[in-house]
Amino acid sequence: MDDTQQNEDQQAAADVGDVQIDGTAPLAAVKLKGLHIAPRKVRVVADRIRGKGVQEALDLLQFTPKLAAEPLRKLLFSAVANARFVGGVDVDDLYVETIFVDQAETMKRWTPRAQGRATRILKKTSHVTLQLGVAL
Image 1 (cartoon, rainbow, N blue to C red):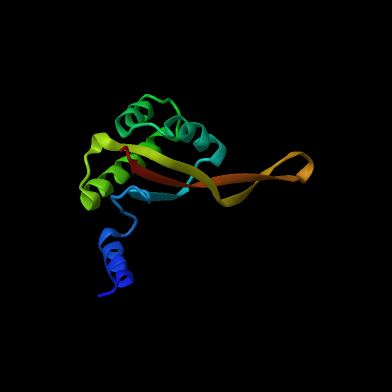
Image 2: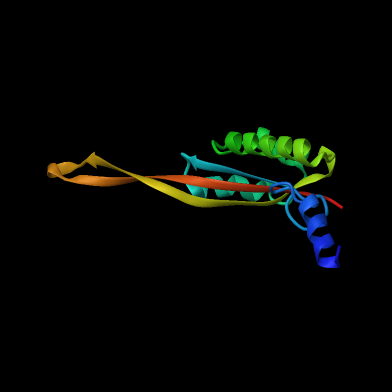
């Protein structure tokens, strides 16, 4: 067996979906799509937990009085469960490596105004992507 074949076999053994233990890629990546909160409101909460340890991030989210805190808390729980199931790592070593919020579909609604006019209401939704890493 030549070296390239052996390296490919080792790489294939190390990759399990989005999970790698060697630290080159995020340990667990989860996505929340179609959250019915505007992205600028979710980003305020997401910025608070970026780079924090998992336990500290969960504590911050539990006591943050914003509507976006609860969906992000559930998303973080899901990422930790994925990391424990697939990666088999200690939860105390995990931290929020990246978290970003993108704008999703915008629902367009109308409300009546004076003199028979109508005004557009834009109800924005968000896509949230969270990736955990292992502190070395």
